[in-house]
Length: 253
Length: 253
Image (cartoon, rainbow over the protein chains, first blue to last red):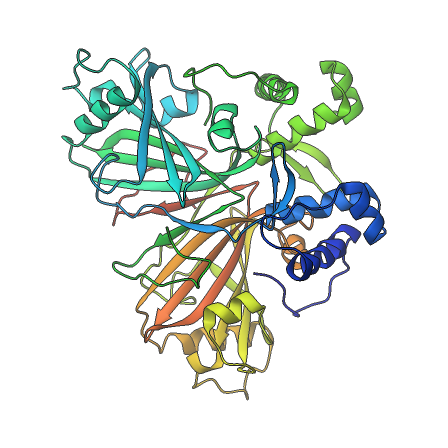
């Protein structure tokens, strides 16, 4: 969503090129089509390659183009709406949860997570890795940090590792009563593991959704979810029951 | 929030450099300090300038560095939490609204907005421009699209333009009963006007929050708000009354 005529502003060169390219994408290219190489494109539009690259980066940020490993730059399909926080009254792993458990480890979390969880030094934290798929594509990777004190009934015997262990942690979480949650969305860059899982390059722009699950007045679990910023728009339905469609290509998943 | 030891992954060069730089930022630099120029930095860390630039871009995406016009690259302060959707039951312009009206124009909206509003061809749309300031810094710019049919009582006589006109449109909106709203967050690039207002370069990464306000079963207004992605984290408090603090530097505004 874009332009208005409120006030004229001088345009940088790459900005003008972006507009021209965007129109060319609409009229000459189809979704999934591979763009000509940078040299040919720069020649066609009569610009320096640095200018072309800036314009391509803009279009990538806006979700019009995708850079794909081993393929090149392709015309992106419209972004897919991915619902965030629809299970507002439920713990991760409750019925209807869109996330799939992948793995689980017990490890020292990063300092920012320790701050948020306010775990003591040396307190064990279960790190559950989960993934989310929408329309057959991986759209998000999550690390869910669960302090051992939130799942006191967890037994180490029957599921020591892997997805089974992850499911055991999630199952134990359901025994706690959830008081509420809060959530923050910010821009980030994909860590190497997440990038691989999301089929992106390390450092690609991602939307990081941090959710704190509160029980008994403290943070009982912390989710750090990394969504592909190129293919996803995060949707929030704030008002109970309101479900509107965003047109054929913009449906919530 | 960052790393975990779940599985080892080979690191690209710029990725390793990013980690090293990040540690140097913590130990040697203070918030607001200007970084040495690229040539000196590349020499100090023994890397090519292209590698250095990739690492700097990563740190910018993560909010650790800011590129400022006419200043250079500086160490960024921690991101500020900006509350989104706290007035969930209210129209834009209701008491307590964090946005300031700036301007108003009557114009043809972009095609995507026309789709969302489902206005007929040629139906007039008021475009209200508003801005949001947090901790003395501009954090977001908004275009609020209001079809003429949503504000039938609006008179053209006493406030034909400017902030007064914007306030008149917002005042008229309050006469409609709000049924609900939905919201989407996605990555975008700053349009030239927004960039100037937010003190960023055109094309800088931004978080675009699109909110549809629904009344009488249709979209009665559409807000497209552009938040600085470098300085803001958008916070959502989903559960009524839950207000937790995120530590000294991470308070919701």
